[in-house]
Amino acid sequence: MIVKNYYTLSSKLRNAWIEFEKQAESPFVYLDYVRYIYHQQRLLGYIRGVVPFFRCIESSEGEILLIAPLIKHALSSDYRMMTDIRGCGCSDFLYNPRLSDNERRNCLELLINTLGNKWHLRRIPSDSLLGESLCKNPRHIKTTACCRIYVRDYNEWFSSLSSSVRQNIRTAYNRLKRDGHTFEITVAGNAFDNPRPVEAFNKIKEESLELYINRQTSKYHKAGLLTLWFKKGVFRIIKHDSKSLYNNRNSITVLLRIDGKAAAYMGCLMSYDKKQIVVPRLAIDDTFRFYSPGYVMICELMRHIHDCGVEILDLSRGVEKYKTDLSGSLYDTFNIKNN
Image (cartoon, rainbow, N blue to C red; front, side, top):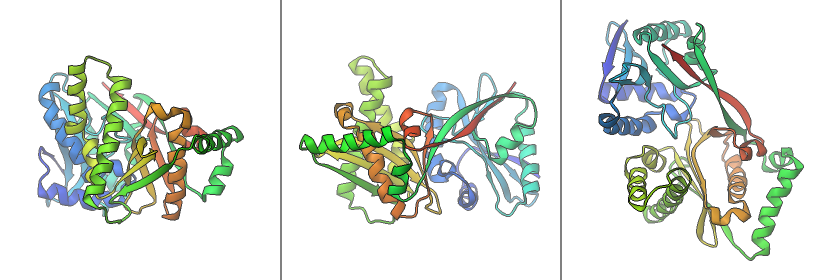
């Protein structure tokens, strides 16, 4: 076996990736998603001093056996996952589906040895082959909790919630009705094979993107008007998920409107088998906080996706209270450092 680095997404690499990703656990490792991260890392790498590339293990005949999306810091010379970036729920390598478990482990061992003594790999699923292999030797290991909801019949799921959460949800709906507000939920995108009129989708995209950007800049990026204008431009033009969550073939945009105004938004990706939806983005408009728009949006979405055969709604990193309130189950990703 040989080790080879790719600094561009060549046709050979793309073709292998598309084949490998069909057996991957998470949409976060699909090429459609990672390519936008690669372009963002490449663009900002000149400023941050990092080089994005793809390290592959190949057979002596040149067949790709393993793909590792990585970045290398020019100054510190340490390696990190290319997808260790805000908005990405997990990071992993991809394997040739024709390899046995032992062959995958051998490829993985060879690749890890090429990283030397300075690497920091984060967002690694604890139940993945990569997570298992990296934890064999004593290293600095931390965990980050994530949360997923197992989708069931809506009434069965609702009954599983605590009495206080059920009452909070009823209160949200009652307040909307009592105050004379109307609401509607729109589930748009490519993942459900529904044709989407361009004009209508562009309106949804603009509404949801504006809501998300306003939420992010007001919550995390308080600054002067010029700085905020610049940061909003970065979110809109450069941010990887501002592209993938609207353009990809497995993307889903969920938008809750109250009286015709965007009140809550989720940007999602669906797995190949259409049984899992991951949620990298969620935002609400605080002016509607009294009506708990996040609760209402997720409840309405749960009604919809159960009928579509979805089994898991993965709310990704973090254990915010609303996630566990809505019957979310916790799982871990590893942050593993070796230096």
